Image 1 (cartoon, rainbow, N blue to C red):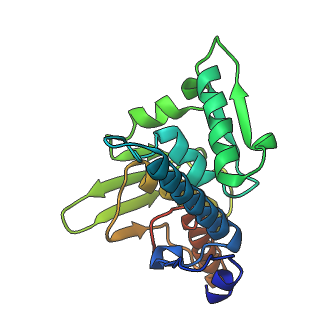
Image 2: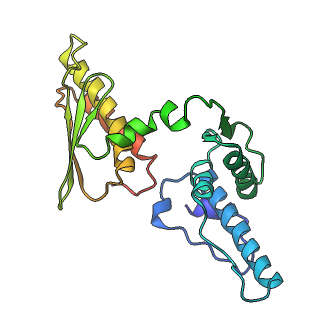
Length: 226
């Protein structure tokens, strides 16, 4: 983290504080966040010096602006937007925050016949958020229960019996469940202690694969995980 800080061009009189939530973040993401905050501060100062009270100096970012800020720092990330006004606003925000054109990172959805939320399957996901059961593509399922003490998630193989090898079936279902669990934690805004009961596997190498997969998918969550 210190090496990343040394790589930033910090002006005299300015202090940068890296919070523990930044642990594990790459240099590109931190630099992008730093540049955004510096530009924001400069805009606030300029507005302050050029304005006569009473005047609004700064307001909380809109949802669209926060999405552009929080999820497009990586050049491989893509945001699909429906609507001309929102698309043009996103391009402006992107230019302000990152100092470059979005290129392929912003894509405008133009299918008027099918709304974007339906096309992407978001509405279907939202409908299932209030229930404990989540179906997995292979036929397995999750059972999510929230109590005062913790969140418990049970992974079931259910109809996921395509493979003749039971061990391979368990591994495939568990890996698939790991992806879905990471998504459900974000969608349901679940936090605190999360206990997951995966399908038992006998081979240690498969348990390691599952652990690595879980660590990988949880890196996408902005919340700190241990």
